[in-house]
Image 1: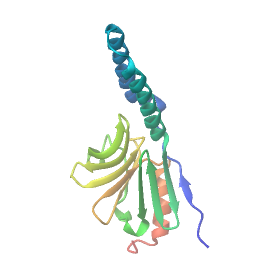
Image 2 (image 1 turned 180 degrees about the vertical axis):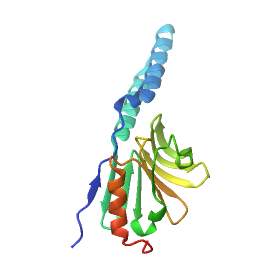
Image 3 (image 1 turned 90 degrees about the horizontal axis):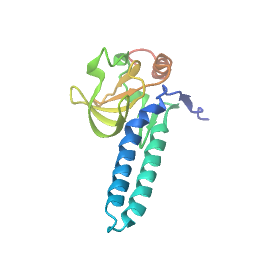
Image 4 (image 1 turned 45 degrees about the vertical axis):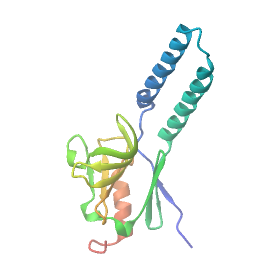
Length: 181
């Protein structure tokens, strides 16, 4: 009989951060409407195609922003964030090197380059390169309390659970005594 999945709440990310997405899209829509109305000889067909496209794009990116979860299922940690998902067995984690950090104070744990991700100021999701060029999968909603989990392959998970200490303790309990992981 398998154990039930154990979800861990993700630290809240305020909805106002979506203004970094919505304002540019609204500006583009406004410019399109303004230029189309300023040139009456042009067909308005592009507005009937582009404006709904921008609305669908805004809806999809807003939905993605809210899609995030952290679940411990048996011996695997699953992190879902926006369009991305990462599953890591506990045995692949170097838990003795795991840290709970404030990224403002510990810049070496902060993602530096987005390689395949979704981000607005204060929110990072997906695949990044760290300052030392190592790879990381990120779900950062609160940079003041981030759980940095190095992996045996040299990459890391950098995530923002609501209670990082509780998640780290659960992972350590699954791994067993130090030296067993």
